[in-house]
Image (cartoon, rainbow, N blue to C red; front, side, top):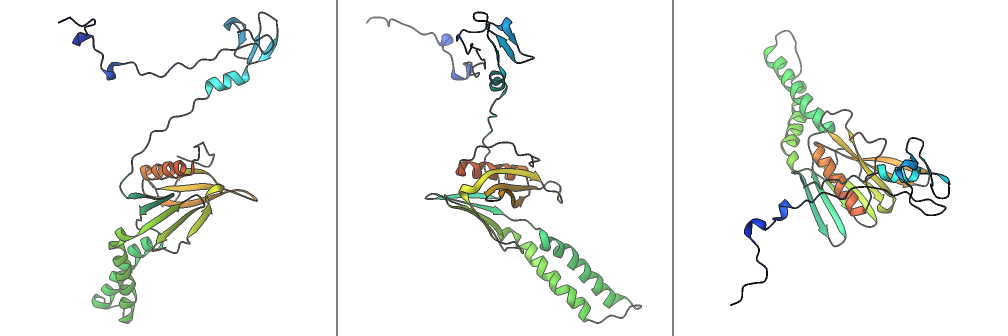
Length: 252
């Protein structure tokens, strides 16, 4: 039996994770627009963004070349779905469900009405100096029980985003006095995030909508973490094929 022509020693084998996987270097060659000769580095004035050809003595601007060199498209890390958000694809539609948290009128009701109810009950039963009607404790106790019931059942409340090639619609159930919103998908120019101005640690998701009178900035929803906000931004932009760019109003 003949020996194989080539033998590979185990120590000479190179594992994939040992390979140099660094990206290629970014560089730019400058050519003369007149004679199409390569310009030497000594003939480049980077400060003034000018170059002089050593062959035909033409002086020209290299501003665009430098701009291309400096501009690097940021590679965004793909975010994994955080807890509290569900995605469902049906045919060409994308449905996103976001868990709600206590907010708005409910938040005030859960905090204030139990306090008023306890205070009025304490005055009615234990205070000899103040004589109040029994209807006062009842008046505060009923809404206190209502808001506490809602607070304990908030895990069942959701915000629904439905996106297809025609519309992006958003609705909350229960609506908490919020109107359902709908926007034409083709009019959505950008999605961006902001810190919530009235709640520390919360973030708002916004879209820029093109209209006849110009662009309008619309707030979609408030979420309780940055990971949720960034994930929603990522998925909406990916579905609508929107290239992410910086927005002056964005604070995240």
